[in-house]
Length: 469
Image 1 (cartoon, one colour):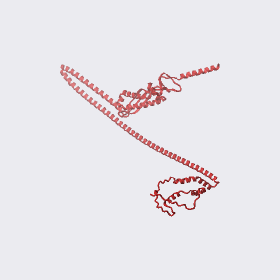
Image 2: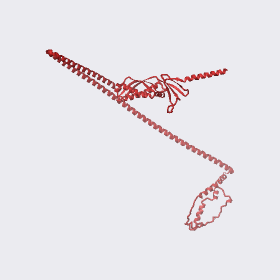
Image 3: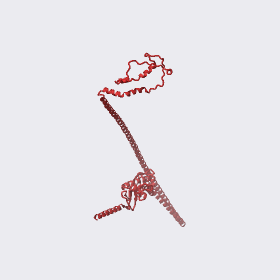
Image 4: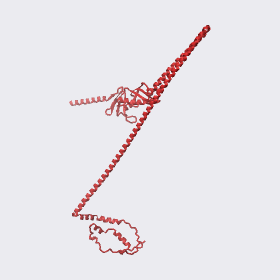
């Protein structure tokens, strides 16, 4: 009974632990994060395996062993982009300090890009990656616009920046939240000169407007006074004549005053134009010097690159030559080792064969009772059949299809004809059997015959008419 209770308690504890563990694998995603589930997460429509599943909000059960999860932070990142020496469409370099606010996107497709490209990266690494993309797009946009457009039409500039940067950031899973361009400046002073020119133009327009208004007021006042004087002159002509003379002097004085004011205004406008032209001339000279320095720097960089490439190519050729020489040396060493091994094997075989022959010869000498000469005769007697066969083979294959003989029938000093001498010499060209045995130190058995002491019988051969042609 006690064992049954213990078993039930153990089963209950295991069951409770399994339930707790299963609930612990049910993960909830906070609102400021993206939960990325990776591992075996299913297949795409084309049949390929999915790289990850992204969840923004809600919860998901993480299958143990085959699945794992991580979080992507949605906290916005403020990136300071201090762009310097960006080349505009007018080939004038400007500085555009700005600040971009970006964050991980929660769009479905872009969120998948973030899971594939940003998961596991630190915040600083993500900022550096986004900063590189923003730098490139800013330079591209500035290269397509004039300085006047960038400086005056900020909305157009910011719209182009937002559009281009947003497209590139989506490729890595980010979205652009805000763009703030603080100020635009250039080393040549072109933007400052533009500001001075605009200010001078505004001042001149204001002065011109004031002068025109004063002129219109004077003319209206003169006309009113003229009408008044005409009506008054009808009543008192004498008084009007005196007043008219005085007014004429006043009008002349006013005209002279306006003439002086116009001259002063002309001098002021001319001086401002001259100063503006000098400012533009100085800015153009500074820009020319800057471009000259830049071209010299690029030329030096190009020369350095060419020299470095030449040194690299030279080193590569040297390494290839050394590698080829090493291969030739190894191949020659391998061939030499192979030749040495073959010659060593042949020498060992020859040595073994000679040792076997010496052992065999020692056995033959032992069989001959220790007499080396008798052993030698035994060996020669054993090979005699082969020697005779070689003699026979010497003339065996000689083919004489037809022999033409011119013979007068007269005998020589031995009484033989020429034909008989030819046949006798042919037969005697083969060494006799008895001579072979004698050279070997042996003698033929008596049943094979003995050598005759008398001269051989003379054989006369009379050629037939068919053999004499």
